[in-house]
Length: 497
Image (cartoon, rainbow, N blue to C red):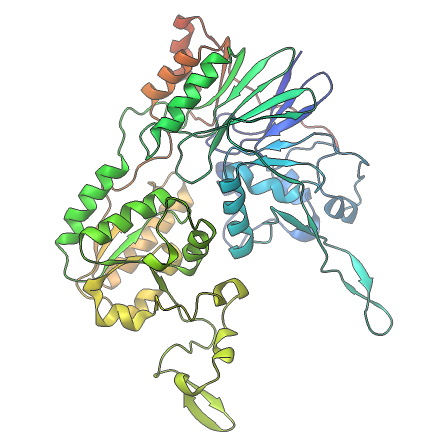
């Protein structure tokens, strides 16, 4: 008999941590961050302490108490026992949004992580460019370890890294996790590499939707998943319901058409805020820039991601412009000075290696590119550019000092108090510089609407449906009329570690 335990994704959007137990094997679907729970307790400068291992997370209800799944260094540092063997046989990652992957950081390195190659690349980007204390997704840095000094007596803190057991799944191929046969099926979502899963053993066939939509650039993927899931004759389906109570859709084509109209009216700089890892949205605004005789300007982080995805369907790194912000000493143009042997020299007379020291190692590969610009270029020719500017880049406006500028918001509406606070801050920045704010009709959700979700489930026709990743599970009740048993999942009880 297959047993399913829900440690997240119940009555909430995100936070999926769902354990499937068979007769001899078990695994997790995703291991993500629950936004609402985290926002109830945490803020930008109020975060769990690494010094307390997993205990801050457990106390706040962000991580479940489960024996045998957490990393040795965090457990033993906190005086907790560490099992010799992992308690689960793997984690199946549907996609690399943090509400599905963030807490991989806390897992022991010998638990296999199964995911698509594109999801792996996104995880690598999160790990390499992130600034948080908890982003060890593809490798684990041993914490609280002292090793002998290479020279002299005594010890120093270890810098050793251990690779996680990462296993890349090819679409539609079959793999085994113990007694479970696993098939990864691509679906369309708002970042590359999203997958649903079909898993079966002798007792059940389980379909896990992950996050998906039918109105993105590749609806054929989600349609094919629906067909394959139907043919599998599932006994159980776990379906997301983020927008189960919504009926509308905005497509990338809608955004592109409307953005071209808006950008065409502007003579000054156009700023746009869209999600960093939504490469479909990047394509949309790359097309907008092309159609309005502008160049799309991306951040160093997005340039890094694009570089990882070279040779795929996205613009080449040389087809966009890369923005170089001022860092550290701010040595970026001939109006910046530093003292060299009692003489104040401008940037052009200073060793470039000293300038590069202001930037992180991963950023330095882009600093000398032919297609890199700074705030001066945006000042001098504002009508030439479409500048991606998110919340954390608003400070660049102080240098750019844009006139007659337009700001297009192409991201989700605030869905919690902190997001609303940040939204108000964005408007304060825009008001300060007299920037025209446009925000209606420029975001396509990564999730299917209610009608599409229900129709998908009817086609798949499982015996039982568990609504997850939704605040409105009651909207699934209409499926009872189709002979599908709707079961509201409940959060599983914790086990003492």
